[in-house]
Image (tube, rainbow, N blue to C red):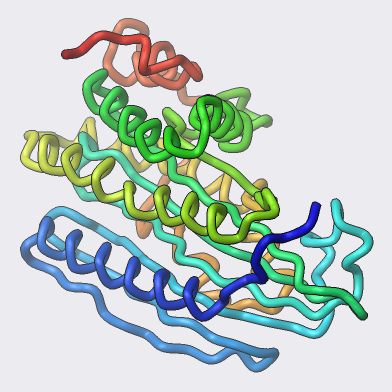
Amino acid sequence: MSQTALPDITAVREYLLELQQRICETLAEVDGQATFITDTWDRPEGGGGMSRVITDGAVFEKGGVNFSHVMGDTMPPSATAHRPHLAGAPWQAMGVSLVIHPNNPYVPTSHANVRVFVATPKDGDPVYWFGGGYDLTPYYGFDEDCVHWHRVAKAACDPFGDRVYSDYKHWCDEYFFLKHRNEPRGIGGLFFDDHNSGDFRRDFALMQAVGNSYLEAYTPIVQRRKDTPFGERERDFQLYRRGRYVEFNLVYDRGTLFGLQSGGRTESILMSLPPLVRWDYSREAEPGTEEARLTDYFLTGRDWLELNHE
């Protein structure tokens, strides 16, 4: 398929840096106590980035919002598995990726990412593809939060086609799934990758719509749950369930694999891991409890938009 416009890397970079700043400013305001520190870094192999990290806040125990723009002379194996014709091509990748781990177990962990990859084969025009999405990982679930999250996701996708939300929602459910546990990581959201319709401007607009809707999806949930009382039981369960998050990111996550294979900055790659976590041998929640309801009801890949919570 011919491309109607060559990739405008400058425009994408400007947007991503603005998105990073907007997200950090908004979440710092929600926290009300801690602010994001800035760590600018260079990558010896080419490129660099800026990590923004918040820790020990009133609301957020740890959070990171990374911008990176990295490049290399030869495509890494994780990027050429489905594109053998690009093996050996110089490349560059750019994106914003974030993970937010709140203090309160009633506030879910959230993850979001928007990115673009460009490779330039020998004697050919640049080839681009976009990816991204966001997903929500509750420890104690609420129907209204799940419905809100997915309504915002659908509204972001609707201008780009009737099936975009349903396709990306299904893709998210499949991707954020721990096969060795036979359970989803969370209640899903959106996930897409390898997106190139041939129209760079429209594809870029889709990526922006997803990136711009993250705060609209997450902030109201945080505001509703951040002052909910909790005790040692809820905190213990939160730390235990965080173990699933670590398992997914270290075993399955494409971004982690790509970053490590491409000589990425380890501190930034592993920024997504929570500060405290625990694993218990053969732990099972007592039937009928809110802890059991997480896996029995919320982590089932359901269609949240079928619920009526007007």
